Length: 267
Image: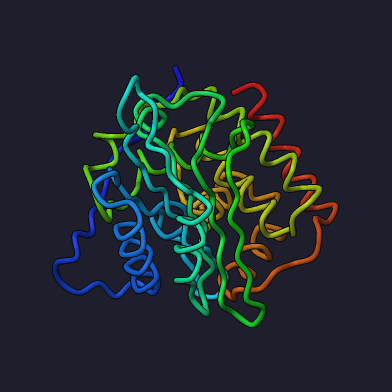
């Protein structure tokens, strides 16, 4: 029998000091969301590498998921200018840490399901090449929200609202595996080798243990499980820790990803 998905939470309620390098940006994001959304803001959660323990300043994004109320009248959300909300949040970027924010409605958080609809996505960076994007859902949704919600439920850090597992519903293990497979297939052809290899490592760890972990933790685990891939995994780990990007996947990187895909297909 496959192991269950783990769940838990940590919370930052603004009381006492935190030394995490992403905290100042998280505080600004939360303040902007509160100003824009007021009482409609149900919860705000840090996920991704910042929550899983693999955050690298200068390399990692700060991933944030915000949940808003449905509004009034037969479950329909308030009429709101989501482009304006996104534009306001996009101004709080950080020189070292790009922001990735998704805003979803409470119904999706409580019962995760297709088509993975969202209100707005925001990406923002104030680094050497400042850039920001505000994307509205035109009806296609975003399947990446499946993994975002799974990580929030398992390891999210609450900046505002209830504990993650009290708000975010469970996601079927097979759905998570299917999304991991899609992500690996995309990554090996479109991303740098570090991204592809490290995602493969943590995908296999989830398949075998039910744990959603950081790229670094997944890679260190795989070194013990699959020593034949040591060279390419250590190269990816070194790049991650140094905050550099590798070129596209080499033959060794592709071999690792394919091995993991084969295992996930039968998991």
